[in-house]
Amino acid sequence: FFKQKTAYEMLRSLVGSEMCIRDRILYDGLTGLFVRQYYEVRIEEELSKLKRHPGSIAIALIDIDNYKSISDNFGQEVANKVLVEFSNILKINIRKGTSIVCRYENERFVILMSNTPLNGSLIVAERIRSLCSKLDFSGIQNLKVTASVGLSSTDSEKLITADDLLNRAQAMLEKAKKNGGNQTMIWPDTVSS
Image (tube, rainbow, N blue to C red; front, side):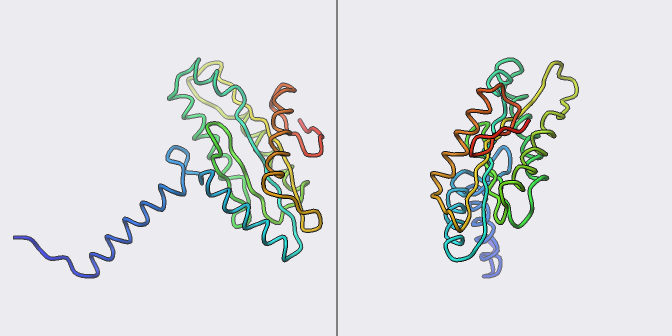
């Protein structure tokens, strides 16, 4: 007949279920990156730390250029592959332990870089942007992928809100895209390409 589960087996099953639920809440199903809501919690935690201890944080808001046309011209399967490959570049090129990368929305990503001054975040952003333009999608002709980046930062001496930090990065991202894409714009208003 039915075999009764031991307490250990029931606990193990429960823990496994909780981990599965946690993973669905924290991680984007396609890219495996953290979700936007995780970023929103972490940015507030990092800003709170800056109120108590000296330091700096930077964010990079990154958008895959012309993503809609990739989807329209090559199909959603290829567009998803672009998202996954780009996400892999992001994962590999952040500092483990001090930075997190999240899928912010659709083809937009955010990197939160703790203990990172603006010049350090620029190095990370430029490396990612450069690697993105070198992505090779074998067998898909005429598929060129580039990214635009908006950077902003704050420190314990001139602390700004999470919204201000994001709005500054958003303004720089929009300017980078308006200027033709495939470039990094830094608040306050300088360009690197």
